[in-house]
Image 1 (cartoon, rainbow, N blue to C red):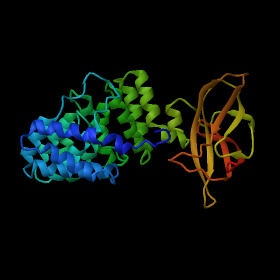
Image 2 (tube, helix red, strand yellow):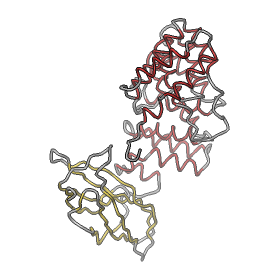
Image 3 (cartoon, rainbow, N blue to C red):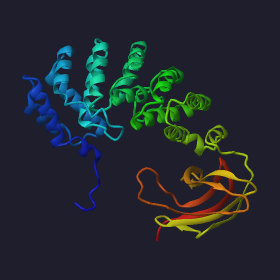
Image 4 (cartoon, rainbow, N blue to C red):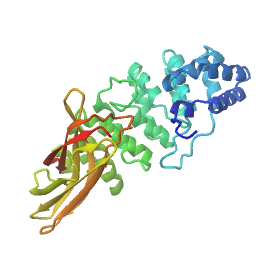
Length: 377
């Protein structure tokens, strides 16, 4: 229906996907009650959120597969469809319906059968990524898992190689917190940064971005080392570097700017910062413009910062990309941007009140201008 809100939990876990999972297991295991499993899951599904649905499905699988984990592991192997195409480079994420298998492996195999469980994770991750399941094992059996990761870093299937990086990320969103020292995984990233698949190198860059929040110098050292060894395609390494440094770039970190070829102390002049309207209504847009000049050829990375009003009177900054360019001597770089203040965003709530626009060039805010955001009439 028009206007009906998209539900991710219903898109991923529904009558069709549960039926598909039930069919796979019923074919693989004569004792699996296909209709009973399907009926119980669908009855419990409606009120549950996404993660709770995943955990519930794992519990219902345990009802059918029993407490004998080696036997259950064999049934899971037989139920799995063929691996995802190993010749692809990206965007083949598999089917989320296999995510509950990770919960089952953790709850029923980790304590008594860690090696068998890791073998099974290696198989399942070739159908759907198992980074969330790997992290409890990393906390419980760190040496055993690290030994396995050394082997997996050279695996033929890129989903297994990606698991090495993604499963050890210090700040994996929605993932269990791990106690692993961030430096321990760096030798694995040294190998994986040269991977030929973007699916893997994106994870490596995200991993470095996590580390950057804890220890930027480790990230600078790793990226400099990778540039020196020359094992990755130059264009891909530039992409990895930019993606890995994105948080530090927003913060205006001098080391990040230097690695990307921008001088934080470059002599750049900003003039004629003008805003199209003030106040600005929520739901409408702010257009602003300014001019950059420099006495010599100067690469510039231009962002804009909006300090958003909060209910307690504070302002919270958010950084937005604007342009990468080169200022030529004797020429002006004329910039203009329109930013819309959407009032229906689910991830960030707009509040009326005093705001501030800042223009950040090579990590430095060169000019600011206050404006007021108001409720739509």
